[in-house]
Image 1 (cartoon, helix red, strand yellow):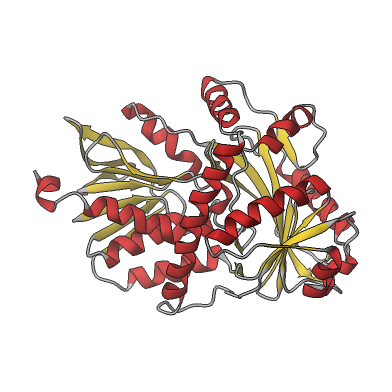
Image 2 (image 1 turned 135 degrees about the vertical axis):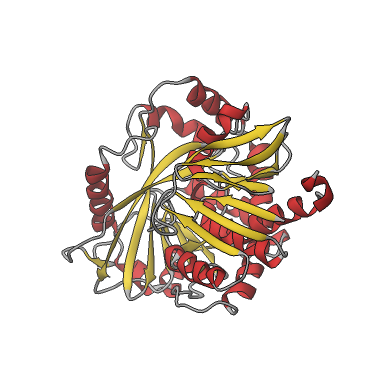
Length: 410
């Protein structure tokens, strides 16, 4: 069967790989001229298998008045008012219960554990350096309440064989000496020894080259998709700026742009853009080997390619990008204040970057078939696209496999 994949980010390219491995011919289409040029380009580089906790939670709900008032520098909530955002917001609030937060985190943990296994298998079968490193991860906490919540969640994770151990600040400093040179008023941390670091952009490019060498795989980059052609509830093809692309099935992996292509077909998915930022700098005097997250200030530090990637923040501003330069400066200032020796903040250029994370209200990706035969979704991974890409791709292939080829050809 010939399957088209819309989107050449880390989720799209990984989906194409697993479809190809299952015996399908695959065409990957993207409007950018290279793979992983958008949300996957310069993300936090963390494979956070042990830290996939849903954003929607009782604690976040209690924090929302402060967010709306602009009291949290790391999160801006200034969206254009629209029916879609209001509906998304109400669904998000509905997920902010202890039961929903636990259930959503549990599902992501299962997906993350499987993704970890699959990436371990995959990275040994493709050429190219994408800076993979078994780094471990420290999440630094500032408030006793966060520490207590972390203890409860760590018990849930332990039941799944996922170590995420609550440690004292002294223990965190022993694990990663660079923490001693951070200035936050931390009360402890969560240490996840099984979490890794790798460059999602470099991985996507290496996997794309691997796909190009396989018969039945091709890329159509720099190609704008005008819409999907559907007749009698059956997918028939893709209308593009260069004409019709025929395929037996299509998988939408367009992140935050997925709703726009689906809404003309009457398919609504609850995906909203949360804009994040990063800078990539030369290492500082005390740069960390372990991946470090400052939970209270919402930034992460990862060491990749002999450089330091600092990423973070979450802005709910629709699809606006006009304040990117200021927000990159805000991120730099936050990191410099709290981790002054982690990077050489005077190094230039800093490769400032912004990208839209496709966030769902429950924090879980949307990997499913649709009411239209031959149309599938693999989108809405939020900030976990790199972490969950392999497992969600495997699930997608299982869905396609459930449809007999004869039925697709009918």
